[in-house]
Amino acid sequence: MADRPNVLLFGTGAVGSVYLYLLSKHCDTTAICRSNYAAAKANGFTIHSPQIFGETLHFNPRVARTCAEATTLDVGSPAKPFDYIVICSKVTPNTIPALIAPAVTPNHTVIVLLQNGINIEAEYTAAFPTNPIISGVVYLPVTQTSPGVIQHGDIERLELGAYPSSASSAPTTRFAELIQAGGGTAEVWDDVQFKRWAKLLVNGSWNPICALTRSSDVRFMASSAGATDFVFAMMLELVAIAKAHGYANVDEKVARAQLERFKKRIETSKGVGSEPSMLTDVREGRRMEVEAIVGNAVRMAKEKGVDCVRLETVYFLAKGLDEAIGRALKGSK
Image 1 (cartoon, rainbow, N blue to C red):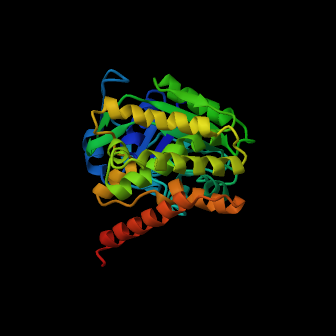
Image 2: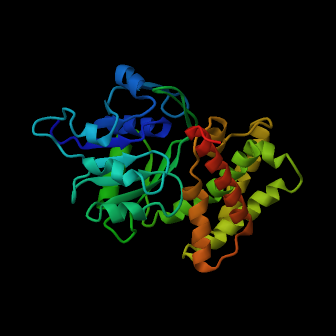
Image 3: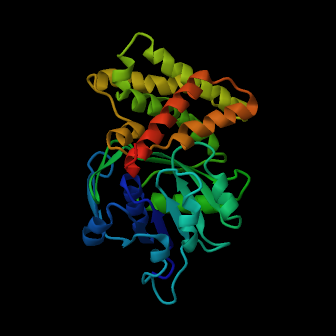
């Protein structure tokens, strides 16, 4: 169909595969793949989603190794520019804008950030000042069990908003409609940064704590009498930072609701709990999203003179661990 939007997805791992599948229902899609390139090229993607979509899903998007390569693939005559570039990769500061630049058409391509962390959007507005930016918060428990094969859990929720919040909401609404048409959940918020802060209460505390202790959330809570209180104290530091930056609705009530979700896992998970992404990264020897999830929050605290001694301490420790992983990956001592 001539009117099908042309979508490029950068970072087609577990999360990216699910959203590319939903978009493929009504869009022409291209996947940028790295470690799973050969499998995706030969066999496409398979998503096992018995709890949400009720079936095993399979699709075969166009596949490329880089955005520059993606612009050379046969996408019709004349070649269509990409209407959307959806970024689902880890946040690696000052890296991704240059990688996606060959596929960005000024004044046209909408850049969608489905990534973790806070204050991650500014480098995109600086690199692409004429392109709409959509910021997204994802709740999607997924694992790539083998290259191109995805296991999906019990949630699929996407919260979207224009960046900055004063920008037109029309591109965000259109993108949300594409996700919804594909069978997914997408909510549009006037200011999605509130939702980013709400999720950061979880990511900014549990992710580095579990990575540093090599423990699941439930096992950390059971490790000592004060462990759960320590997590909540970190959440309250993040609440104070959010409030200092104008988000008064990120309050103790929101933090307590987030903590209660994890307390319930003590019973439902039979003492095992879940392993957040940073812990998985450490176990598999991969770099972590320390700066986006923890470092940016610490720097935003300093901007406003907010005390965050626990968060800052955990940041220094997690940063040291991440640098050690980086050295190991380079083969140095």
